[in-house]
Image 1 (cartoon, helix red, strand yellow):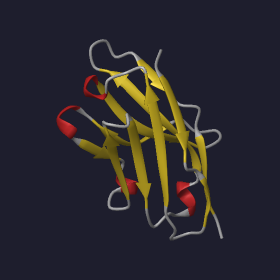
Image 2: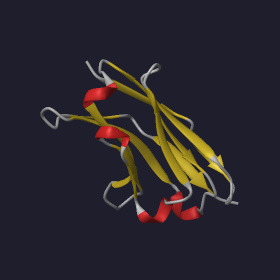
Image 3: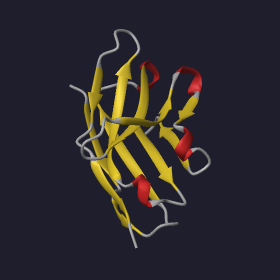
Image 4: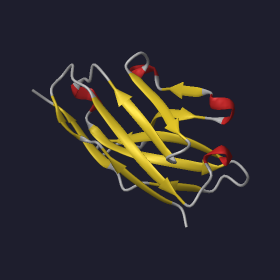
Length: 117
């Protein structure tokens, strides 16, 4: 049973930083692609960052240079460090994993990030 539990969201002023964490259980990271998505009301969920096989990373253009995705295989955790946050980064952020063998996927419950002065 795969479970993903996010933490680290909150309210931050523009230009501030947050670090999201996703604790995963029931899986071995080496067999999964991992990522962070975000969603605002009325819009589709958007891929923000992901780590693929060979530790390749990919980011949506709007966060390049500001966000960094990383993993800790010992802790079975994936992180999203967010710097220089902007109001348009406000969204619910979701942890996502996909098993490469069969493309089965799992989602965390989401954590709210609000960037406002």
